[in-house]
Length: 263
Length: 258
Image (cartoon, rainbow over all chains, first blue to last red; front, side):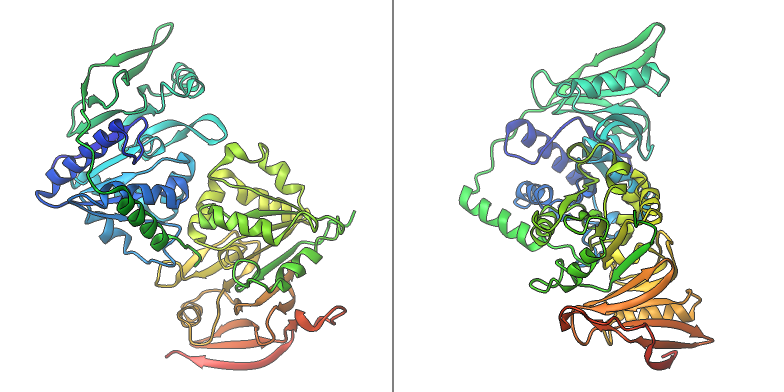
């Protein structure tokens, strides 16, 4: 089974074309892995399991040919889940954005790191954006403490990643400085650009928005180099035809159902 | 400056999170903030809930500006909060920890160094309190029921005891606590919803309650028997000038393994 990781520089579950294109790619990767109707789980840990992040995930995958679920580590009191069985039963695990430092700390507290590594080796697709993309690398640039700073990830992938490359100049500057200071090099990803690792080789770059790019970032004599990686364009699928009012109702009902955390 | 007492008030459950319309426990902890009695500084840590917005809003409603100087620290949104966590937390009179997942709470605190800061705050006389996960976190060992099956977790260890919250008759947690004590968990304290254990230093000073029947308990294992002492508890609803009861045993029972 091929190990796959999809790292995204910035993605949201909205109906905007670039977001739809990326969501569609995830559904395709999950369906390939399942050989049929896939199971897709969101881990919203980095956000503190916000209802917004969970609700927007269901608003996209709730109407598609898949079985979506969410695993809220802050709500296990209300909704106990057998973590291992649930995660290893998925075809794709999506990790949302937020605080990279908190994400890694909470996963460590719940012993999730080793479990996700096992899931990856079993060919369960690991995907994520922002903190949920950097977490797979040895290190990333996080704003978990306010200012951009280096933070460790799980290290399934060697090197480092910096997200929101086009949108957050201060994050990019901190990344270039860190690589210049000896942090392992890696990649910069614009919003709606991504890198897909399949098996052992180098990743392939993809972009869902014209102009969004992936960069190879490396320390060179006398500085740090940034080289754009040729990327495949992901077109957006036709918009879903579900009536707006029905979609809205389902979204709100889903969020209500999943709200509540006190244990 | 009267800041030498190290105080922790551990609620079994209650306060604004669980007892809408009954402010007795929240009033009690606010009354302990004696450095600035006119306008105590109170900081809410909702980390165990993942810093849930609705929980933060309810805190500010329960601790309005005319009674105290309220603030909160969200460790998921550090860019919005005080830049210097240590300075902010050490300048408080009362730190109030909300409920949720104690495992996630401890993970996030350690990642931001809040565990060390809270120990220093306690040593400096800042009153620490909280319910549920916000009670368990102060003890050496605790029983968490957050994953369905109750199990043992290690807290910050400011109090050298074990702790169990929501200690209601016949609850899974109560049975699990007895089981863990028989298996070697250190002696400790439990509190029902509405009861709070007030420690000064590492000594239980008194048990107070927002409900007349709510109680705190002391638990010890003797061989394969668990000795449970119900502790005399001061009901806070009897009006001003209550005479706090000393925490003597009210009743003693022993239970052998089921």
